[in-house]
Length: 393
Image (tube, rainbow, N blue to C red; front, side):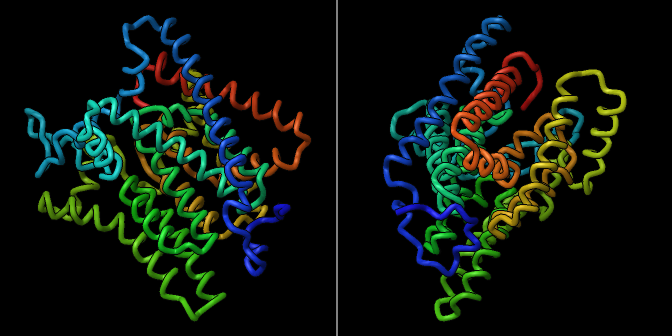
């Protein structure tokens, strides 16, 4: 059956083919996994090349286990602390309570069957990356068509700092859960959408934005069919509960309801300042900055804003639009490490959809050449950031 290339919102009242029928069954999924595999192999080769140039004695495996990976591993191995952490001068520090639980729980589960904690962290991340590729393909296919699904996989998995999909970070798991949640919601498989949304909300704080997107999908479903309204509303309610539950648990554990926010600010300077620090970074970098990494991050932030504007102008499926806008408000509105913002934007699919849709509509040769050029820069950029660039990603 031919797949309608119109946005999903316009197909709401038409007969919905089965998900596998819409996605081209296993052939389409295997193609998506093959595209993902190409991006990973290309980036691993770049990591080896740049790692040899860096000559700092760090192995390839070691580079995939740096920075936030250490925090996740400590949660997986030692559990969460019961209180605040202070240095020798009694200054509040960041600790493991800043990190949401699903990824470290999965690491602990894999470690329990015989893997070392480090190996388990990479196995979970790579398995989640494959699941993310499949979920992205299914979402792009069910909303727009098979070619869009493949393009979305290629563009997302080769984006700047998509290297985190290979690292012991939680972005791959979060992306898989969110893309899976929206696919299930669009197909009206509400039990799956609710569970995936709840898991996403316990994986990263921006799961709150995903849950709001699911709530919009639920409201749309209720307006279409009030007879079974409890299913979408229950799914949305379950997803919306995830982030508040974890924040409340941290507060109860420490004895301070603002504990999670205080730990984030103490450890990483993260607080919501309504975009003031982002604006100051852009203003300083674009007017007087001379470092190419700050300049590249500034340009990525501006390009993502422009892409989101194009995406919104094309009237995407409303739940995906709401998730994208809220997630971007959270990323641009918070203070913190400027060079981490491109990583935080990776799961915001709204910024990638315009390019994926354009690639699907272009002639195959044009689409392939454009995506290869994008991938060459994006994969190199991510590899550079964890080999040559000395700071956290």
